[in-house]
Length: 89
Image 1 (spheres, rainbow, N blue to C red):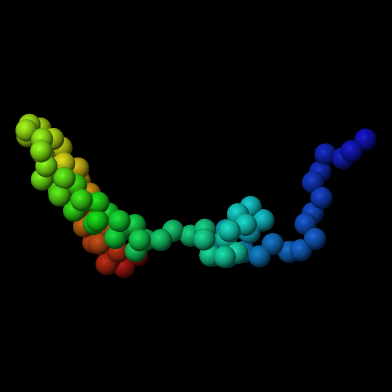
Image 2 (cartoon, rainbow, N blue to C red):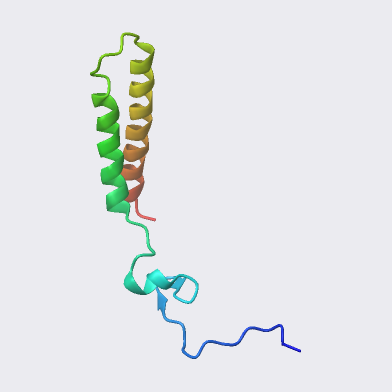
């Protein structure tokens, strides 16, 4: 009858940062962490993109208010992030 326990690995797991490479193999290549600079850039890019979407062939103005509102929420989140990063923890 087979045992219910798993066999241990033949090598010690290398820990990249705080992620065990046995659980997340891509952590050994450095692909497991967050990319805060990329996220901030994407946030500013998409906030601007939402505002550029106001220019178009739509006739109603309700869409414009939604675009402005969502872009404003993104900008508020980005500014909040900038303020919180400057404060010492």
